[in-house]
Length: 87
Image 1 (cartoon, helix red, strand yellow):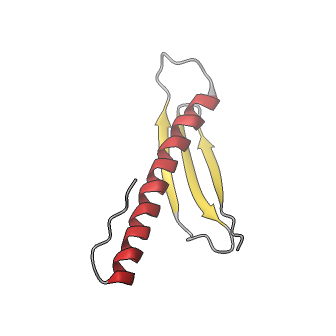
Image 2 (tube, helix red, strand yellow):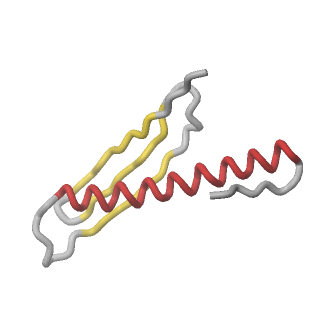
């Protein structure tokens, strides 16, 4: 069996704030999405890449939490007993 999920990252920036929306895509992907943001300090150099990296990492952390919660819920539903993920 072969299955592939992709992560799509989209950014919105205004020079100070950077927002990132992360989404799992693919034929059998669970259709989850998440959001992350960053704010540039007045003392920071104007490097959009850093704001994107911080916002993306926050969105991916949230996406990871949502994916783990969904998997845990599905384990609970399957076994009709509490599921524990080892990680």
